Image: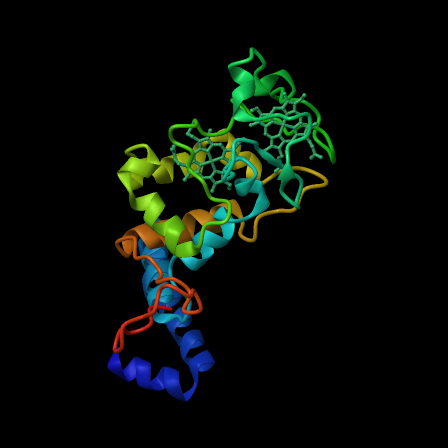
Length: 220
Ligand code: HEC
Ligand code: HEC
């Protein structure tokens, strides 16, 4: 590892290529899915990016943020504008369901209501806010049983693999931007993050109140 760090200083790109190459050759091929996860975890550990970065990039994409807003209203479009017709999570109390418009198996297109089974936003008492959160905040939120609905990491991986709304987000049809990673790649980086013990990034150094004490190594 120390030798690898030295090499990284000399020529980071060549070093990264050789790490990727080594992992693919020695780990992925013989060990199948587990090997792929291990290789992803290793590649992440040895790369400059923080293992949570790619997870956060997906969570903060409009396809996810639009149902995980900071306020009471779901958001719409790639610009994440508040939902038209004053739709908020309170409409259910007034007798209208999201699925009155968001019918499963309806035709998909720009301006049409997206369609996936059980279209709704998280409950008010467990709001799972993604909008406006920093990667560090998102990371701690996902790990906190009080904020994630008591989910084990395995249950969360299961949710992210099969939940119909998550599946829709990665294939939203015409007129809507795709998240930065494919669903398969997202599951890979999420599993790799779990394998590494769910490490969280530190806050961005420019945040005014959070001064890093001297000698604290940067994590990213
Ligand atoms: C149509 C709205 C909708 C969309 C789009 C959506 N979610 Fe969710 N999400 C929910 C709801 C509702 C819950 C609360 C749990 C439940 O009801 O299954 C939830 C829960 C979660 C949870 C917590 C796990 C749990 O079961 O409590 C995670 C993590 C999550 N979503 C991630 C995502 C990601 C990542 C995307 C985008 C790829 C996304 N969501 C897109 C509605 C949505
Ligand atoms: C009166 C019909 C109607 C109701 C009721 C309704 N929606 Fe919508 N919704 C739409 C339409 C139409 C669009 C498409 C708007 C667009 O993309 O320009 C939409 C888009 C959305 C989007 C944007 C998806 C994306 O990423 O592009 C979300 C999220 C959403 N609705 C959530 C909800 C939730 C949650 C509820 C219930 C609390 C709800 N909607 C109730 C009609 C409705």
